Image 1: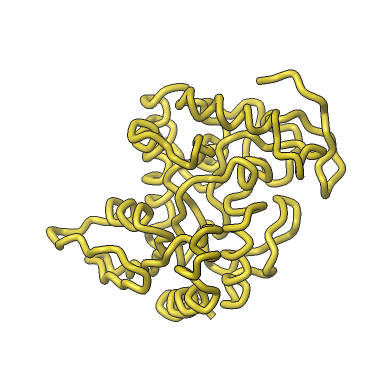
Image 2: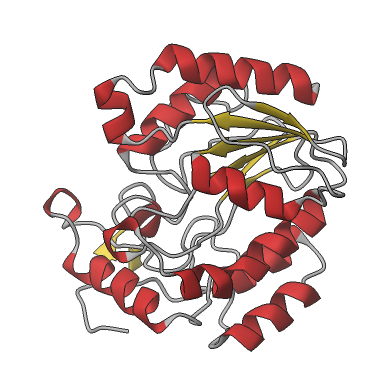
Amino acid sequence: MHDVDVLAHPRTGQAFDSPVAPGTGWPGDPATSQTPVAVDPAQVSKLASGAGSIPELDAVISVCRACPRLVTWREEAAVVKRRAFANQPYWGRPVPGWGSDRPRLLILGLAPAAHGGNRTGRIFTGDRSGDQLFAALHRAGLVSSPISVDAADGLRANQIRITAPVRCAPPANAPTPAERVTCSPWLNAEWRLVSDHVRVIVALGGFAWHIALRLVDLAGMRKPPFGHGAVAELPSGVRLLGCYHPSQQNMFTGKLTPAMLDATFSDAKKLAGIR
């Protein structure tokens, strides 16, 4: 932790240190001061396998300190801040999944952004990628608002859950292979807790596609290749849809357009049986 000025949350006005201590009242904080903290890969595996519910899992994820490089980076970003957010406290902790505990549609991203989820405490919230994603989800009737600003904005999910294979903002948006392995039990546990309900997975990018294939028993099936618009019928009955990641670069260059996002989530909603 760092010695920093206490700043007011932009919506609630409550004062917080950066990073935010668990149990101090941050909107949506799933943890308390008593939540067990994983400090190495073995403890990640133990706490993940022992989680009996999504709220319990979210809590232990949100205080994880198992990857020293990622802990240092996320907390440094929380202290130094981006100039546009210099007057705000930063969450500065791992970012758990968001949405329904019983989702019919699971959306899989990559990792939180240093000044997005790492600032707001909600996945895909407060950055350009999230702006594109939530606008598309709202057009599809899958969230209650086209804007995801912070963890206290009242946004609601319609039978969807958004998550990621890496929970901390990584330097240069690039976690190491060892960090990805250390973090993987969290997603495995999340899948264990929601898989009975999920009918469709949307993978945002090729990396998320390959992670999704690891979650599901392919029963000897050849791994289907990623592509935007790709649809894989998996042996478990789950359909996997491929979508380019809604990164600022992909949207700016036109590799991914709002119309392409709309088509993806319209198909996903229909296949998942969401009204």
